[in-house]
Amino acid sequence: MDVDDTLEAAESRPRRLSRERLSRGLFVLPTLFTVGNLFCGYLSIWRSIEGAFEAAAVFIIVAAVLDALDGRVARWTRSTSEFGEEYDSLADLVSFGVAPAVLAYSWGLSDFQRVGWMASFLFVVCGSMRLARFNIQTKVLDKRYFVGLPIPAAAGTVAALVLATPERLVDRFWMTGLLAVTILLSYLMISTIRYRSFKEHLDIKRPKPLWILPLIALAFAVIRLQPALLLLVVALTFALSGPVAKLWSIARRGRASPAGIPSQKSP
Image 1: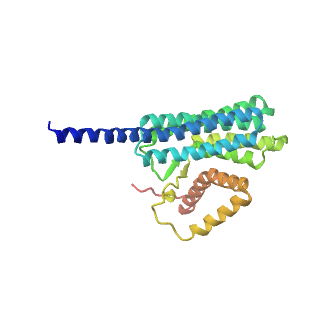
Image 2: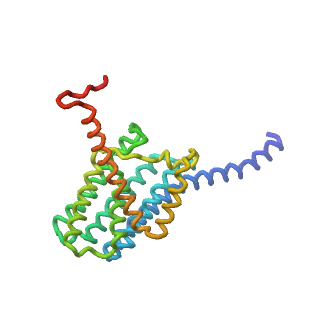
Image 3: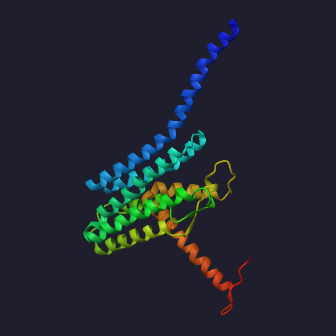
């Protein structure tokens, strides 16, 4: 090896080391978002036990934002891995399974005693099953739809209810309503009802229709005036969109088929 080759090798070594450090840093970046998601779930549980229900709900919402970002950051940095996917699911179980269940129980289900904790535990069980099913079906499902209510959306619905009325529930009527909502959300997570993904609408590279601009402006105005109310409306609308679409589809098929004549199925 001559002198020029030696000098070139010596100059390239620092660049190679720098690229390796950058690659390792980019690999860690999505994991930091997942750790942040898990930390928010832990803080939410802690604050629920202390009776700070509004703070507990806020931590669940922040965890949902971090959960939405970690996958995008992983794809952007090209650092997706099986470890990251599994770790993300474990963090989601804490932040969107255990944390909202503890929040719901502490906020309005504890007076039901055994029925209350069974309903909150049902939320955890169904959430874990929803995550497990998503992990094994992620490569075969239609990317435009979710099968069953996503667990962050279910957790966000509980958090939105608490943010709309942060004081602990004392009226038996509203406690019963929360019990019913908790059981309904648990069922929707493990159901086969399809929910629209909307991921293609969030792609900033795709052209957007002009009507989206006034809609965004209206959303920001409502966020400024009544953020908790808007969050609750969005959460409930999405949670109910799947069953409503399912019923509408059944009704359309019933109208398309004359009474007494079975509808023909395409081969």
